[in-house]
Image (cartoon, rainbow, N blue to C red; front, side, top):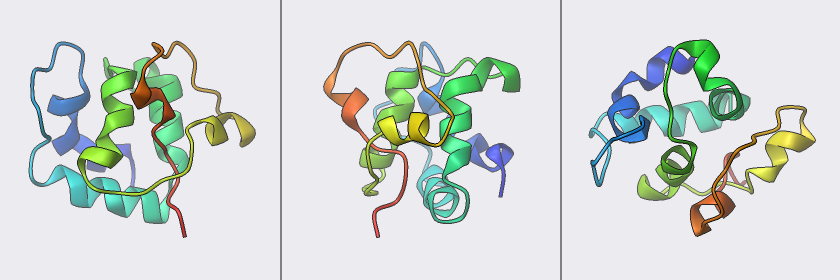
Length: 101
């Protein structure tokens, strides 16, 4: 699984999106990525422009909770060497990236 498999989520997380929920195919993709390669979400948040994607990081951080998925704090991205910068202060910044076991 790679970031390309999150294509169904892009309309929700891109800048300027007014969607209140992602495409129905998005949540299963996020769940699979969280289970198989959670570091990829850190990479997407930290380096989205390198992938040619204009991601609204605050919307992206809301994605796991919108999908009903449980994850630990996004601050763990920094702990594994993938710091996520430029987050606007908001409750969504406390949402999580790695799956809780």
